[in-house]
Image 1: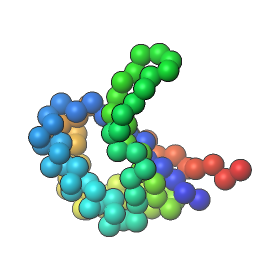
Image 2 (image 1 turned 180 degrees about the vertical axis):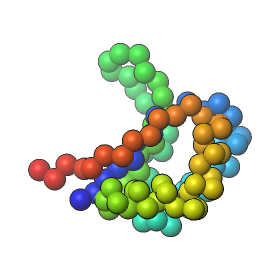
Image 3 (image 1 turned 90 degrees about the vertical axis):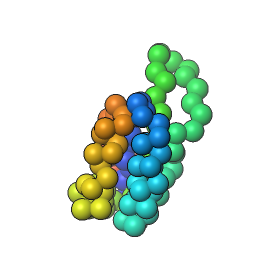
Amino acid sequence: MSAYVLVEIEVTDQEEYAAYGKLANESVTNHGGRFIVRGGETEVFEGEWAPRIVVLEFESLDAIRRWYNSDEYQKILPMRLNTTKSRLIAVEGYDG
């Protein structure tokens, strides 16, 4: 079953984050994932919320774990942590 990574991001260093983004794209692709949403325009319908949103799709939660824990991603993860305030979760898709 497909699984998704959902990331809520507030970028604090745009230049360094852009460098991270290029490396993250390679890492995700190398591990069979793909970007579904990557910081596009948002419109708030309810509440007060204006984050940058990223959504990745992988074949399974196990695939997400392999990507996230890979040496390749762990090497660049500090770049995201140092250039953003962010939250990241993984969730299985709906197979109804």
